Length: 115
Image 1 (tube, rainbow, N blue to C red):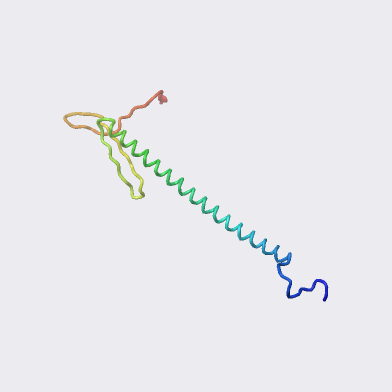
Image 2 (tube, rainbow, N blue to C red):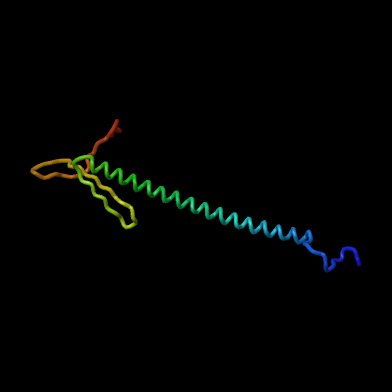
């Protein structure tokens, strides 16, 4: 029998077969890790955006509540087609002949620039 010839009773894998198998397995595992990392990043982004939206809703509700408790005035909240809200708060700015004029009371704080 020649040296290096394979006989029928030899069992196992050659070194080349093991190296090729390990290389393929490494590539497959790398792809799995990249896909799971991408999914995790997407999930984290969605959670953060949802948290921001919730915080903004809570802030709008608190502002609305504070304005309602501010006393005499009107508060109207309009929901726009894109889901955003507009808030208009008006106070009585003048009263004459039994009629109230509603609007924004202009008031500046601090030093105003001279014209």
